[in-house]
Image 1 (cartoon, rainbow, N blue to C red):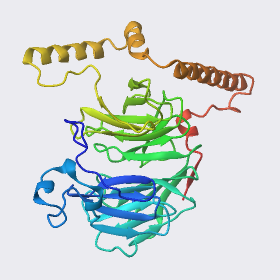
Image 2: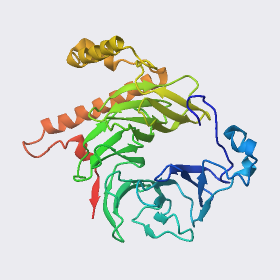
Image 3: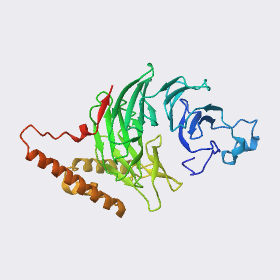
Image 4: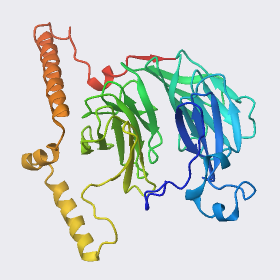
Length: 367
């Protein structure tokens, strides 16, 4: 897609099954797709002149599905649920029944395969700084870390519910976030996996996808509750929420390279482009106007602790269904908190300790 014209510049009937993932190679000249039809295909953004006429070759919008063929096809023994290409090497990782590491020049079978308990691995992602580190999430509520220099997985820990997506922070590559089905997003430090760094709340249904901004200071999330939210990495509450009346369950979200736009894909078969900052003006700003906006942002941060400013930042226009679900969840969490406090109050000193919520997130560490 061309974001400026909002038109499709390339399309092809790539697979016979549901397309589960897409990722570019290390140079951005080609990209890979994976599907339920047990195939992985490599595609080029340009079509060879031998397959198209010169007139068609200069107009991307006139490409026909029959004229575009994959560069390479990789066959697997199982459905592929996600794919991620290495940022430096000519290799990519896929997840399905197992986590597989593929070499671009080797189409017959993967060079490595990892399996640790899970019947199905939902997502996988390379670390943006450590070339041999890979993370994955499984349907047994597990999150695994792999060192590609060894033949066995490295670390594994269990959460209360499944995680649908794992994403590394591009600026702090020791940290990663998990989009979980318990309506929350969890930040973790890979050096200390016994507790979460931060619990990001506000969604009222399963979080399907997360994506970091190129700046590493914020990330966007897509949820089954039909909203897209933007979180700061150091804040447990969302700073902005996007929704429309026609938008259905949101399955994927991503940032543009310049961090100014957020692209979301929902169940109503539409792609939507949002401004990463809703109040930002598009185009070139005059120097005086830009300085005024910077001054306003500084004033907001300076007085953010005041109750009136907190209320303005906290109150957002939301659909009635989401507001009702938020109220019900607040009632249930308040009741659980009161029950825990009563138990501690009526117990002997030291017999009943309340464990922090960030520690309760990790059910078990597996070595």
